[in-house]
Image (cartoon, rainbow, N blue to C red):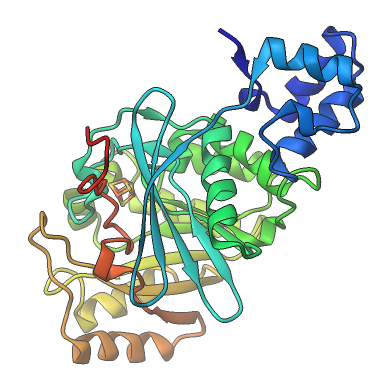
Length: 345
Ligand code: SF4
């Protein structure tokens, strides 16, 4: 079977073309055709001689994800369901705003971390997504919405820092001037708090933004709600967050407000105490309920009180508007909507 040329990283593509006798620079040309020019037929790669195009076509295929379903929410965000070549499913979200057009990508199929409040955590981990499969989510959505994409967030299904290979390979495509050309400051990797992965990201050549899904200010409660915290304790996590803020970018702490679990003023006080020495931004998100989970969003008054309290600090605090809730496309709601598709699982 012809090998899918999209699986090759930029460097591997250069190496491959050299081995084929075409010269490494052909690897740059093909990479650009595939990712920047979004071409899926070797015949259209017109700066490559016809005989070579024919040979490439005989030896390689160009395949990626299949778009299975697209749903639009009244607030204009959109949810996309994709199928991989090995018949697995994943979702991504497009969030248009006045000045930013953001795509929220998935990094894994399912998730092994099982955070209690997250619907994705109900789907067992099937596998990591390859770098090209992460980049394909962006490429297909870009094509569908016909609009330039300004920001990428790794906040969809899965934990990106448990798929560092896929993450770095996709970043190569996303950031390269021969790929999507999106600046690293416009890319946010969100983690539930994988300390080892954060250390590797910190040492890597990438200067992307880091968001930490903090949510609970007490180690025991955090470990109960986010089992990953048992092996990645709060104290260590905050130490590393501080390092990231000083050495790369100011980190963002994501705090999902859940009714009567973590929405008291006492929680807000403790949050500020914990992060007082960390230059950071706080993103407050009111919980997006999911029919398969028992948790609720706090009352608006309680959210407002929490938010106002945080505003008294020196941190930048943003109360994020919930987007896509009506189509279960909000934060923590991606759980594979396979209804009304031709190929349900
Ligand atoms: S919040 Fe993130 S890490 Fe936790 S279960 Fe959901 S997808 Fe996985």
